[in-house]
Image (cartoon, rainbow, N blue to C red; front, side, top):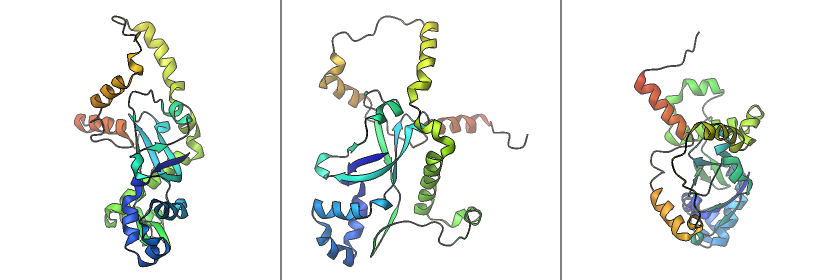
Length: 236
């Protein structure tokens, strides 16, 4: 999926590029938005990222993106994505948040390069055997590459492309027949469409990003496994 993101997402990359004499000269000191944008777009093939919705409910809540353009910092930490994102992830306009996970990068005279975790190892098995030797940036890039591999695999095409409501709507239709709803909470006055309601919802959910990650619900499940002492049977 293609995306247009805020240039704020790459502030650290740009600041490192400014320290490189060759790049700084080529892009006029990387001081203007035009030159910063030109630098990033000339390296956009190195900038694949992940966006994920919280709550993360399925593989279709985590989406690989190709960054095709950037917006000025004055527009804030925003992103523009295709309208199909709403149906795919099950967003419902109650201040759902979309987060971005980007790779760690090195700056060279040629531009941007992803931090490499395979440079000392010939095979993936060799890498796994020496996992403790990786630094934090290498481990993070490895994790993101694993996510990317899973999400772009043809084996997971159904899970990553089918909208969330395809699975949840049948469940809702059954549950509404079984659960008695107390009172009528339907909004008849249109308040949910007003800026005041949006501001109220934003304040209510402002701290929902605490201890979250691309696999937020999996983290909850892992907590239950650890606290109860449960484990998977790996050799039945």
